[in-house]
Figure 1: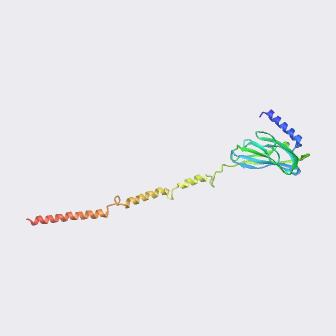
Figure 2: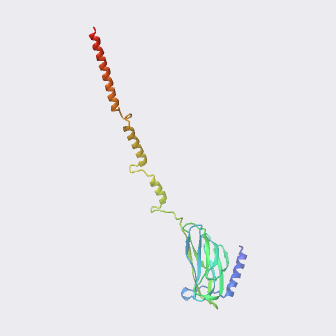
Figure 3: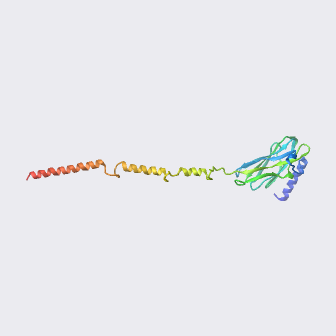
Length: 241
């Protein structure tokens, strides 16, 4: 939007506010006011949308105008919708929104509009939602009211990661712990497997740990038979001479 378009749109809205009887010379102190225009606080993650309510506190409120500002590096304006009042006549640009609306009969402390933004800032960013005093006021059915303002704040939340006391990601810590070695610095699973294999290899068949008792006994018996047979043959040979 060009500067000329901006100026023309704002002039039209200010003229409408004048016709509605809402234009006032400026904002007054809260203790001297007959009405207070407020905007709520909010917080959201980057990329999310956030909606804040604009309300007028006071008796017999029949109209308002408000020029709301914010940091455009943190929030991007999306829409302004009506609440207790009809949708406002509005003019918006980067970092500000002017809106106005009126009705024939007054009401007590209405929520006049809901303003929605998209969070474009980063985690930890914050922006004030502030009213431009000279462009912000309220009126009853017949006259403008001495009006105070009360701004709000939008905070950009963190990523939501579960961080433990030492600042590390808790999930990463858990994953590391799952594969952590035992107290002697070795992997318990690896240690068990090695131990079992050594035990089985040494005791199951005796082939790798030493001679089998059965094999030793068989060898002794075989040697005895050979020696006994030789002795008998020797005796017979001597007796034949």
